[in-house]
Length: 388
Figure 1 (cartoon, rainbow, N blue to C red):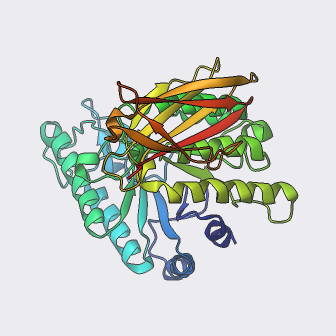
Figure 2: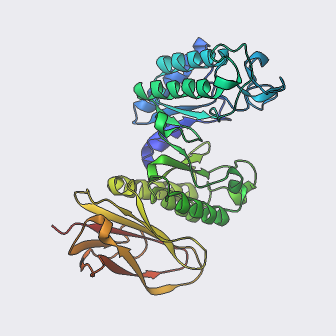
Figure 3: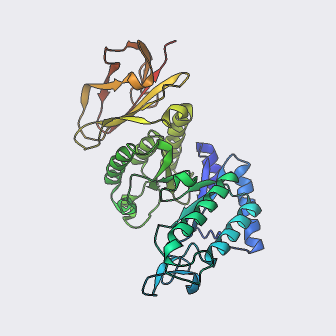
């Protein structure tokens, strides 16, 4: 059912996350065949499927992950064991065997490699792939890098909460701490947008993912979840897709088909995913930072795409306050769009109070000023197009 809902609203990937009873490290034929049939069903509907595994950190002695034998744990200088697996022990051979077999048998096309090797030393002298402490960092990093590279060569998309981009990782975590998703929704939204805004100084939009608890994650109850709250959900979807950054929408369903609220949520997803798909090529481009979220006024960013055939810029503007800003001039620096003389401007294509497209001439500093009427808690889009 969730796959059918994803297809209806336009989502493109489902990930079996932790807590979903998904087990990557399995050689159970019946289980693998069940997962394969689910993946085949999803792919027939245009949905790619990924899976989660905790691969190194917290897999050793006393770790909170599924424990491995102590002889594969990382060893401290004093001979004691750590909660982490050593990625240059026999554990890596077992892990890689499970991964490659599961991918081949099921057609899984994404892996979320949680707890990747974090850079620590291992003083063991009896592990298969390193001699001792001195070469342990190099060998563990090398072996994990080989895994990521091989996955990429197989066409597998790799998520990992670390910075192995030079090894081939596709996407890392950005802009949040997990505990913030137990906070009340409006606080979540503001803090998340602050973190997202800041991380877009160092990440391209598609390098990171954000998070949205449709159902309860760590704590917070109904006050922290979005599954029955269309207004706050719209803000979340708009700010994440409007940044060109995917979020992990965690829950057991996309919307409740049996309720009016559920239908509103379905419409929110269709609206903003449709907007994202129409303007994907500009939304995934770098941003010019306009105004950081402070909850004291409007905030937003501006994507620039000088190589775009039609769309060369797109701004997302948020008024999270309870104040009405009338005739508010938002200055867009068009220098980085490559435009020289004029631009076609489309205001609020999917936001409130849509306006007819109009042509504007650039100022001497290559900017234009777009005047917006910002109602309380309103979202505004500004698409900048070529005029020729």
